[in-house]
Length: 252
Image (cartoon, rainbow, N blue to C red; front, side):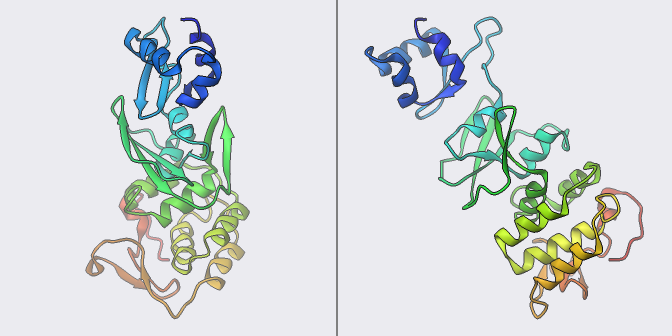
């Protein structure tokens, strides 16, 4: 118990971090002793977490774990929406963006999934948690549709978000600078233009930065289930909002 309180201040830690606290004592042996005694739990190879001795629960939650898997890990997409309160169903996967690859792992019933990125743009620290802005969460989810969440889940999240910053959306689109992504984001968000208070210039921006000689599809659904949307040069559902039973007859 000599080093327990200091380790608790870290929340989670690796062997090197523990060694700086344990100093002259054998850190491997000390940690092994703490694990056997139930003061510390091993999350995965070279990653540990302290236990709240009063409750027997981990001292920090899954979001904090995800945010500290390495120095540049952060919540993305589905997990970012959940963090902000825009997804309220039980979800046992934690989607983690990272500059450095780590192996997916499971701890305490949660699957931690690694998605590689090469930018930390719009990664914020909120209550000690590294998480993308809501605007980046939207762009990332559309970019990775079918991998991080399906179209219906995404639309349900968008349906309860009150407002977005279109300049931050533009910033992320320019950061990725992918032709198909400009069109996907423009098409999907056209259904939420009024709710998000998006200007017409935002959609002009999406079209101006896309190659209209190219065609794409909104997701990996069978092409036979999609219709061609000439304005966006996309094969997509002609009325996305029917997917979330809003009953609107918007024709984009």
